[in-house]
Structures are given as structure tokens and as C-alpha cells.
Length: 282
Length: 348
Ligand SMILES: Nc1ncnc2c1ncn2[C@@H]1O[C@H](COP(=O)(O)OP(=O)(O)OP(=O)(O)O)[C@@H](O)[C@H]1O
Ligand SMILES: [Mg+2]
Image (cartoon, rainbow over all chains, first blue to last red; front, side, top):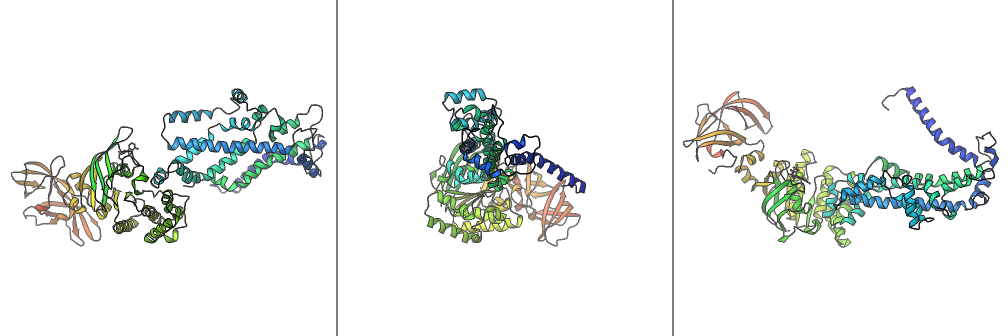
């Protein structure tokens, strides 16, 4: 801080606390709701402390004992989400790192055109091209499949740009030294570029995993078979009951469980993630 | 070990810019050749064409009698030391040194032997497990040298390898590089824009100007007989003084003095090295009136800056030499360098 005045410090902390509260309070309430019985949250008086029904609620949710609300066990939905999120994260990283490699290090005809084509996809997220994309996926027979869930989300340029920027900061001399050391394009990629982009890959993995995990619109569109329901889409389906009260405690317990994998990924990769966002190892 | 033969080499970049043209050069086996010239004269381009990093657009390069125009850098049996070292930042020093050997599928025992040998020669043994980031500039430079020598190539190519080091380290390193090269006897091509580095290191100097060779010769030869005013001013510190003079009836008129001149009549440019100027009596033959402007004290000698007939002239004197405001300077006629108006040397 440039200024070192007491009231500024207080103000800064207040702002931060307020921010944390805005983000964390709903999460906390979801957790609280999952530990009470279903009626507690619709009675008008919202409890602020965890109740005593936590054990049975989570056990019931995990064992799939809430058949009245879900036709699919939650573990299957978690598995679906995990597969889709991993496919999206890995698929995007592999494709974008290779295309960035091609664009930065190779001179081929229509290189500029290729670059701009990739650039244009930035303006076309799935939500914009949802109808034609659905048509294509349907024609390919990919409805109700992991491929259908992940491939359309893999095609986008953000990650390509990130890797392009990373590669542009790597000095040309390094590539020339590698050429003199007898490293062909593949070895240079494997032995020099990949290790040097390690932290960027990790950071991107975290972001893309969460991006894939939190997909909502696309999964509910391309899956009709409940065996492919992802957890985020599943939560919504749980709340859509026609002739009874939604079981909010189960829904919230599911929501809390659904938050866990992204949190774990962030915690596990925190060190690399922060490094990848703030520094480059050149 | 090999000779490098360059014939009519030229480079035109994709944009149409011609960086280098008509280079003919024979580099003997084991020779240390320095390419020197001002920024942008094509030194790096020439070196990179030898290395194979830049495509050759005209002429041929032969290394050890084999034409290498179409060969990849790795197939040319050369090693290069870069200005910014270009060490792999994520590899330890040992891995940096062995990477090129591994790619050539050399046996592991042989790699270890060569790396250890290079580490011993360059005294980098205690850093072998460090990353380049944890090394000083001088140590990185040694590692870069090490990466070149483990390969035991036919030729070393250096592109301004010392320009990122401080002045003192530069002097030490240039001595070390030269000693190492003598010991290994490997043909070397060394690029620098620093004429002092060029003078002190070279077996032979190649002075480049605007993509062409201006002069080739031993450092002393180039210093004593520069073929043009360009070379005369570029090589040597302080630079050679250049004064306008006129040859007329067998005498050279220069700065108010007359010298027994030769050659054709007409205006000439006269070059005089700072150390060739001596103090004379004002009425002596060949004495030029000189007004002292400033003095630079170098410790080992004093540099006096004078005004002679409106031209700024520098002269070097032994330390402690007394200099007065109004003096007369002269030079032995044998030490005059004569150039015609286009800057070419006039043969004496
Ligand atoms: N990739 C390129 N494309 C077009 N022109 C280039 C390229 N590289 C160099 N040049 C031009 O070629 C000429 C020679 O460049 P070169 O790098 O060989 O100079 P140099 O003698 O090494 O200079 P310096 O001492 O500054 O390193 C320059 O005029 C430069 O602008
Ligand atoms: Mg250069």
C-alpha cells in the first residue's frame, strides 16, 4: 500500500470482509440447510446454525436413498461430471497447446488465416451457436454420450491464446539452441516447451476443470438419458418436482457435494496455479 | 576439426532486404576468425548462415570439405554460443550439457565422461546440479561454453557471447575462451562489434561493412594497413585521425605543414594514429600548429585533443607528458595513411 493510514486499512478490511460474506454466506447457508430436516428452510425462519440431521442426510444422498426425487444415484452424476470436466480440461489443453505451437513456431500456408479462424471462435461460445451445434452433435449421433457432452465445449480459442502468449515469451535462441542440439520439432516440444509451460498448464487445468464441471445449459440439452446427467444439471432436476415440496435438505447436500471436487482441485493445484497466473519461468 | 570455406555467400531476407552479399572467405582448420563491424552490418546473419539457422539464399558454405547448404544445424557438426546463453532454464547444468549428446544417442557412460571433463576444464563442477537461474552471468557463460565443447564439434560459432558481462569479466573471459580454443584446436568463428575484443582474440579479422567484406587480415596487418577510412576509424582506440590534405607537385600539404608526398595530385584524406603524433619545435620541418582542447588521463598514457587547422585531432603521449595550450605536432611521413576521396587506401 502506498498510503499507510489507519482508516484506509480498516476500510480495506471491511471491503474484503463484505466481499467474503457475499460469496461465502450462500455457501454456508446451503451447508446449514443440508443439516436440517426438509421443512426447516421453508418455515419462514432461516436457521443460522447447523442442525443435527447432517449424518443421515448425507448418508441418504450418497447411498441414493432418495429415490422419490432422483432416478439416478448421485455417485453416477458425480462420475459423469468428473468425466466430462476432465475430458474438457485435457481436451482443451492438448488441442490448444498444439495449435499454439503450430501458430508460433511453424511457417505454413494460410497461417494468418488459421490464426484468425481460431480467434473468431472466441466470439462464439456454445450458448451462441447452441442450435447449430446441437444439430451437428445430433447428426453425428453423439446425443447422450460423453463425446457429445464435451467436444463442443472443447472447441474454443481462449486456451490457444494463453499458450501463444506463453510461447512468444520464450526466446528464439532457445529454439535455435535446441536445433543445434539435434532436437527436432517433437523433441523441442516435449523437452523444452512443455516443461516451460508447466505452471501455465496447471493454472489452465484448474480453470477449465471448473468451467467443465459447472456446465449447465449444454448438458441438459444433449442428454435425455438420465444415465448421463451431470451433477449440476441433476441439482436442477431435483428441485423440479411437480406435486410436492422439494426436499431442500437433500438438494443442498447434493449442492455441497457438487462443490467439493472443484475445491479439491483448486487446493491440490494451488501452488502451481498461483505461480502460473503470476509468473513465467523464463 | 575442419576448415570452413565460404563462396559468394549472400542473404536476402523474405522482405527483400539484402543483409549480406558476395562473401568469400577461407577459414583454416584450427583458426580463430573474428567477424567485426558496426551494428547491422550482417555479422550475425553470416554466422547464422554458417550455423544453418538462417537459410542461404546465394553461394555455398563448406565445412570440412562438405557442402552444408541444405543440412540442418545439428547435422553440420558445429556448436554455437549465444549472446543470451540460451541455456534451458528448466534443466540442471548437467542436463544442459548432456542434452545435445543424448539426442545423438550417445552412450550414457560417454556422456558422463564428457560432461565431467568439460566441467573440470571450465571449473563448473560444483554447479552441475544447479539450474541456470541460480548462476551468475559469468557462470552461465561457462555453461554455455561447456555445452559447446562437450559436443567436440568441427567448429565453434560465437555470437557476441561476452556482451552481457561487465567489462572486467569480459576481459577475463576473452582470455579464457582464447586459451580454451588454442588447447582444443577447434576452428572458431566469433562475432563481435567490439574492436578491442576483435583485436585481442583474432588470428584473423574480417571487417564487415554493409553486408560486404571490407578487409581480411591479421589484427596487426589490419591495424597498420587499413584498406579504407572506414576500417581505419573502426579498428583501433582512439580511432585514427582523418584530416583533409592536398597532394601537389610531389608534396603533401596538411594542417599548414608540408610533407614529401607521393602519388597523384589532388585532394586526399590523411590518416594519422594517435600514437604516431609527436611534439615538435614550431619551426621544424613538418610541424603543424596545434591548440590543446582537452586532456584525457588514462593512467598509462595521456590523450591530448587538439585543434589542427580546424580539425579535431587526438594524440597519445606517455604518462606525465607536459602539454601546453599552443604546441606543434608532427608525424613521420612513413606513418601517414593516405586515402583517396572515396575512402580507399592509396598504395604508397
Ligand atoms: N529476420 C530478418 N528479416 C529481415 N531483415 C533482417 C532480419 N534479420 C536481420 N535483418 C537485417 O539484416 C541486416 C544485418 O543484420 P544482422 O543481425 O546480421 O546484423 P549484425 O551485424 O549482427 O548487427 P548487431 O551487431 O546489431 O547484432 C540488418 O540490416 C537487419 O535489419
Ligand atoms: Mg548480431
